Length: 585
Image 1 (cartoon, rainbow, N blue to C red):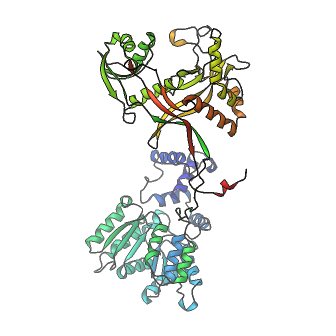
Image 2: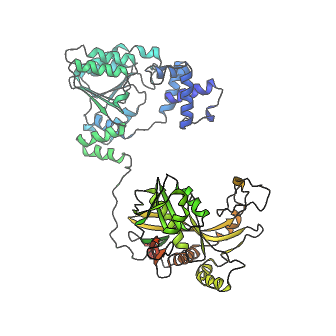
Image 3: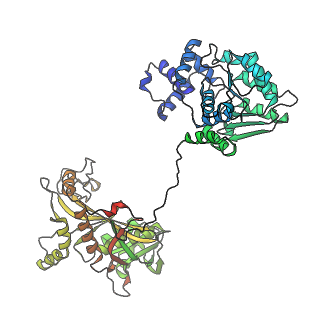
């Protein structure tokens, strides 16, 4: 109700329609709360008088407040907790209920529970509000239980308490009933905030009796840290008066009721009725499948098992610390083929020792034995293995490795005009299975654009289930020209271009070949994909599997990166049998 009142005031003060806001949206909630933090219209959030002030600010007239309550109550239905409480009343387990609510859900639940009992066993509650408090007095004087006492009035009452002035004083006779009940019984407070000064004053007056709350006080709250100061002070005074006080944390009324129903001996007919109305549990037991799973695989992964990976690399020492990028740039200038990872003043290297030493002479490079590689613990070790694997998979094949910070790839090498015809023929034989799987040329130019394209795969090195895998994703790479501005080139000069295999323009203008690429792959369904994955697997791993070397070095010339790659991709199979696998098609 407070949230609804604040929303109405917010709309009124800002000339908004309530249809324009959503009180369930956290953004709007924060916006509304921020508004009230800036303005003195209402007490601060959490103030005991906040509810009364907000209600009176929206509905100044008592008749309008009664209408609001009536409209709200018409939408209410008993929850699981109400059904439990009604059954406890009907079975004589609860003598007296005091409530500050206006709705009839408690008495309706009790009457509904009585309806399933034999007439001789029915216990119907007496309902008393502030304008019929004489009923409550009679029940108290005659011990005629059960009683449902509505401290703020019934929704049908002419007098109901909502505003600050109304809540300051409690009806004398209803107050007496509350005080006398506190002297005779213990009390369980459920979902009560303690905002009403009149009720809290009455509860505190009970503590002056010789034997207040003889069966103790149980204050149920969602969080003990959120108790209002008036409540904390009352409970502290009760303890000093010798009352057994317990603060019980429970998230909702339904959860509390579910715990109570486990220990209370309700008549079977009432227990069954209550359990029919409980909310559906989120976790339910299920019967585990017992049939054997089918042995055949159903999904093929585009991933190759790396059965062994290099465990050591050459260690080289440097005269001064450097970075991997700086070392790679120097190797590139000297046309030295090697894979490196820098770690301060040391390098891990795959490649020919002498070639690397010559290229890195300006850095004072020297041999330092070997360094162990732990790709799980060291990111630099995983990086050098990733680089070496890509180089090894492309070596001695018509494939070109592409190294990017975002991820490496391999593309099919396009034939060159000056290439030896015999070599062109051999490359064609190597790529035949892949070309048949694609059903078209693996390299060429994009129609209408003239950009060169190459089929290829993105590569990834991952450990899954304690084993290393090389994942590969087929992709059509398009070389889109772009101005090489990083070197001071003229963006209008067609000779100053940098080819981006991803087909992404440097000016972030999108992928000009995107539509063509999508059309190229649109008609490739599962069967086509299976053939393409199989062809790439055979090409990357050799027909029969075996070693893939990054450099093919002779013994003693340096440390080579040797990977043993399985020729068969990963497969999955069902974890249990299902009728889906019995299909004939």
